[in-house]
Image 1 (spheres, rainbow, N blue to C red):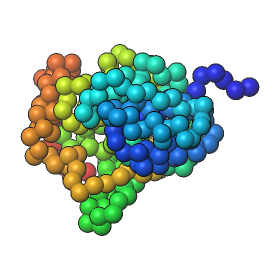
Image 2: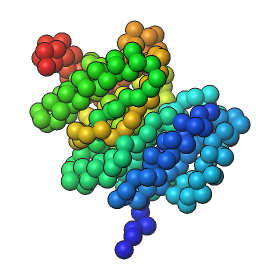
Image 3: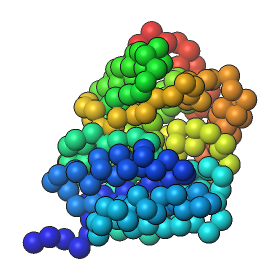
Image 4: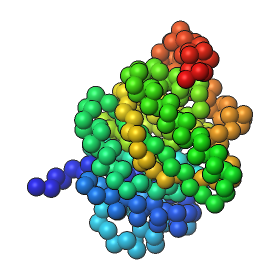
Length: 271
């Protein structure tokens, strides 16, 4: 008997990238072994995604043209998607990424097997046309997976939080799936984070609800010429991490934040 409740609600903010969106939707709709619902939130002034979505003629797809475009603020758009999600789990997919074959079935199984974990994330497989950028990001995400595996082996939320706060991030937004009931207590994405809003959101999920790392590719991540994720000296990145540190301090105390920073500079530096 097929349940009326989807396994996964997929929320996709989109802004003037119709071809990439088409590829993203194809990757989602091709997932086997799970029930999905997909909500495409069009943040472009002209409604550039409508034709792409309607061409699929798939009842699992819902198209929403936002009345007031943000100009490209995914946190605001995502926060309009999760309150109406019906699935047991939510996947916030960026419109230029592609879900790996079999990823949803594996991620759902991982969360079903670990009912105390608030989220699951897996390996990231970058793709793109710039060979130099691609080589750099492949090395980056290989190291990220190594660190995520170690954190899971240790079994500590604080260990993973240290990686998120003071080391290069081990995940990207599209590589994560979260329990729907865990989103509301956190208030969704913090719109005051100018960038790395996904790092902030999943840091809070991990620290409060725990995580599972799936040691297999779950997303094909589109690379570009530049990446704010890797530019630690960008003014917007620095300001956003400052806000993340302040919120963490308010929630868990200065002593814990200082201890995690010391751990990052000593123990984690050699691991």
